[in-house]
Each structure stands twice: as C-alpha cells, then as structure tokens.
Length: 205
Image 1 (cartoon, rainbow, N blue to C red):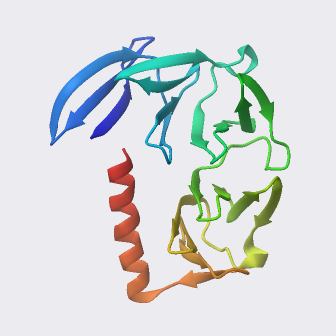
Image 2 (image 1 turned 90 degrees about the vertical axis):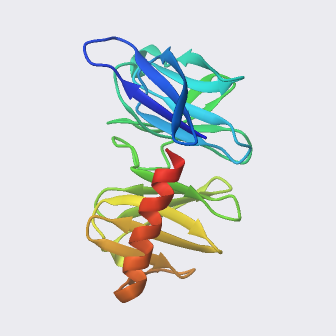
Image 3 (image 1 turned 180 degrees about the horizontal axis):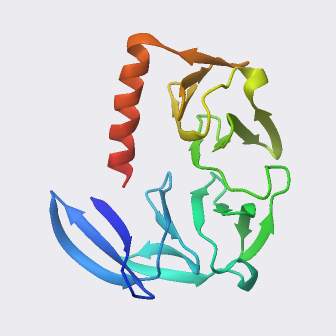
C-alpha cells in the first residue's frame, strides 16, 4: 500500500491518495503536507505548514501546529521507540512533541531542520544535515559527526540503518559508519547503494 500526500494548485487544502496494486483506491482532502513517516508499528504520520496528521481507520486526524510555527514547512517527521514524535521545522530546528507539548531540542543543530533520518538497531535516531553533518541521538546524548569524522559528502540527503551499520548518502557521494568514524564508499558498492536507496525511498512513499 502507498499513501501519496500532494498539494493542490491555487487551493488551501491538499489531498491524500491511497494506492494499492498500482491503482488508486481512495482519495481525501487534507491539510497540505510536506513530510511523511511510517513508524515501527506501522503507523502513518504526516506534517505540513499548518498541522500534523496521522491515519486512523483510513482517515487523517490532524492536530494544529503551535501558532508560532505555522506557515513553516515540516521537513522531517519521525517517531522514536518511546512513542515521542520528532518534527523538523524549516529555519527552526528539531522539536519533540510529548502529550501535545512542543519543545525545541537545542542539543541538535538549531536554525535548520535535518534532510534525512534513520533509526538503528539500538533505537538511536540519526539525522542528516547540510554541509556533511550527521547527528546521532541516543539516551538523551547527541554526537555530531562532520568532515573531521570522515564525512565529505556535502548535504546529507539519505540515511540507512542496515545490518548494524549506518550508510549516508549526499550530493557528493556515500559514506559508511564503521563504529568510530565514516569511511567513503567507492566502486561497485557505491553504485549498488545508490540503486538501493533510490528503490527504498520509492517504497516508503
């Protein structure tokens, strides 16, 4: 099953399309959404400049963004193993949402939102930023990796946790985290990873 959230031209609302077996089987009006996420339990979440949304029995239930954040794109939304929502707001940063309360998480880079995320087997959240930066957040602690840790891939646009390893893709190439630092991915492995990440992103959307 595939869910596609799309804006509509010259309209204050968006649409959510349900696709099964390459056929459209349903469509509904929604808020305009700019990011989506499927959590570990199969829940579907959306975020946009005015509201967050999640699917309940095939319908979107929305919650308005705080007034001071409305009008800004949600660039990323994810949910950790404790059930906390993490929302990346353009030009602001990462917010965690607990019981309806929004708090800016200042241990992560502020003034910007990450472009990519993944969750590893230990439950740590990884976020990809511009200028070859990746942040790992686990048990309330954050470590920021950059060029000094082997990351030289430009803006990080894709992250993948697979088999106990972290793979990062950016505008200038790929890198793999070996447990201590990131190492460049080259040759045939680079081509294989490029194809895999493209296929995985298609499956998620």
